[in-house]
Image (cartoon, rainbow, N blue to C red):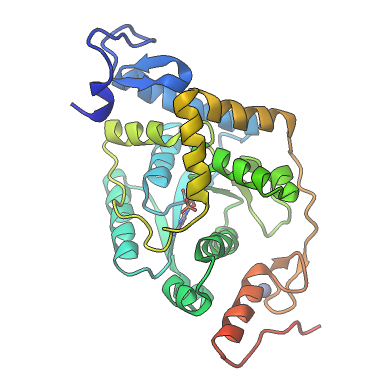
Length: 317
Ligand code: AMP
Ligand code: ZN
């Protein structure tokens, strides 16, 4: 018997089919049996995609880390009938990266799914371990920025127009709280589970799991037999995002439904279906950029400077 079943009393009924309930969902004031829970989970994702206006025939590139979120995302999108392909960025984090690759390999092989893997070392010139040892701070935030920039480029290179990530309700509610607490209005204003393509060479980005939380993803994986990588990222320990998620967890525990209400009420009031980003081209690598250098070239400069390496990337214009 798993953790969820233990806290459901014998005789608790599935809200949908009235058989024995196995999965409690306090935030929905509901309990489900396994198969109705799977239906509920799929339905949450398809509702989210409908709200985003995603064409059901559009091919989707799935950013897969090998963790519980992206593998659940890949399965549910396949089950909903989307045409998908996985993309993985090997960050060069030793055992963690090797186990992540193995988890993806096993998942994709069992289901006959197609995917590509790229190495950060090859695409960017440094592994994340090297970046961490040179810059020594804010590695999580930098990693997020690198993944965003590189996965955007690789998606377009592979001929796809939509990149999908496994960010979920806890990620989005925690992020919103963090940005409000830090009064980062520009990020608050642009937070959305659907970011349309702002430039022909930048894909649209979707977060179809924004309506489900971590415990729902864990239950989905257990029920459907998904085996994600078990280790956590060795560099994520001091990330501030953990504190905001923990704060949301505390509120959720005392007042079930808080996370959903917090995020959804914000999203309802801040409907954003166009992008106001203005792009030019990076003067060093010619990829789309806000300023004279793209985020990746600027970061490379910081790394070179800090490590005393010659060859700063300068705008050529
Ligand atoms: P994280 O920022 O690690 O919480 O990851 C959020 C989402 O980004 C995941 O659910 C994946 O969709 C994507 N992602 C994270 N790491 C990778 C990676 N190494 N390669 C491809 N996608 C990734
Ligand atoms: Zn550049």
